[in-house]
Structure formats: C-alpha cells, structure tokens
Picture 1 (tube, rainbow, N blue to C red):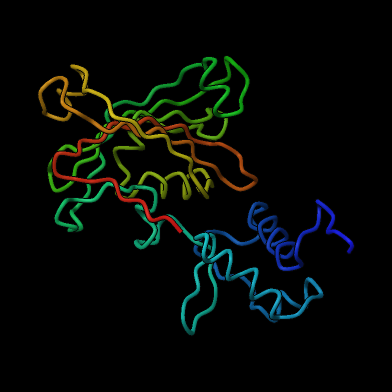
Picture 2: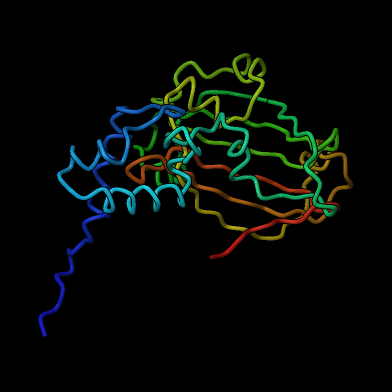
Length: 242
C-alpha cells in the first residue's frame, strides 16, 4: 500500500495556511470581517466545505471568531471575551474580579544571551523591559517582568503604558500592529524575594507560582518573554486540556 509523503497536508490545512499568510500580511486587520466562505472558495479554487473546515479549525484556535448572522472576524485582543485569554489565574470562588494593570517601570536595554535566544534576536539588540503589577479587586496578585524586541516596540514608554486603559495585549495590537497567537509556559514554585514581597504586600519567602511565558505571533515568531510571579493564597491556576 502506498504511504503518504511526509510533506502531505490535507487540502483544508493548505487553505488554512493561505488564510494565515493573508492575516500575517495584514490583508484583514484584528476585528475586521474576512470574506465569506463562498468568496474564499472562489479565491482558492476549492469547495466551500474545505474553506469551512479551515475556518472551523482557526476559530477553535482563537484566530478567527464566528458571529451569528454577521460573519467571521479576525480575533482581536480588544474583544472582552479574549482580553485575558492568556491569564489563567482564577479566584478560589470562581468570581470574575475587576483587574487593574499598574505599570511600574519601562526601560530600554540590550539583549543578553538568554533574551536574544528566547526572542530570536541578535545579542546586544535593543529590547524593551516592562515591569507591572496586576491587581484583582484592589489586591496585588501578579508581578510581571516582560521582555520585548526593541525594533518592534519603538515608542513604548511608561507614559504610554500608564495612559492605556485596556489589556496589555490590546495595546500591543492597536499601537504596534502585533497580535499574540499562542504561548508556551513553564511553571514552578518559588519563594518571594524581598522586592517582590514588598510589591505584593506579603511576607518575604511567601510561596509564589513562577510562570515563564514565551508568546508568539504569526509565523511562530517569538515576540514576548514574560516572567510572572503569582500570589495564589486566594487564587488557583486554571488550564483546560483537550
């Protein structure tokens, strides 16, 4: 029996790849409607069912959003349903508290060995480093240190961060044209050092959850390296596995 080539890809996956290329090129912006399945079928010379299967998979991956009676739209970090897509910390009572992001510092630096490796940039290349505190209903819960490629984030300042009133990723999307597609995380238990304990208003050596995240945009390009320290005295980390 003939075996499939290692490079074989189902037709709908090929169509998905073409749609992704169009998204990466900015043909359709976040929040904008994409052409109908019928129009895309004509464009790619395939059946409407093949296009539908590609869109279904992209919707499942939060790349596209179907809206009943309106069409299919490019997913946006400004959508309230996706605003905290990558934040998996949940209060013990499963409530949805008001979240407040408080920028603490923002400065320009040169990429060291680890940052250059993770962000796939040259050692010594410019990077932006952001430190911020996240409060849940006035309670300090997360301290983040975020490393960003300086070439992409030119113009990012503490004043810009302080004036923004939505999520950090919606700022990255609207101001810098960058959409976060997926993230890889490493989680371990640590003890709070003195500086972190002061910011989170807890005793030094309080148990914390260390969450190291690398976030990717289109083309599997790493564009953010984040190291967060989570206070879990009244919260838990929730992850849904499929």
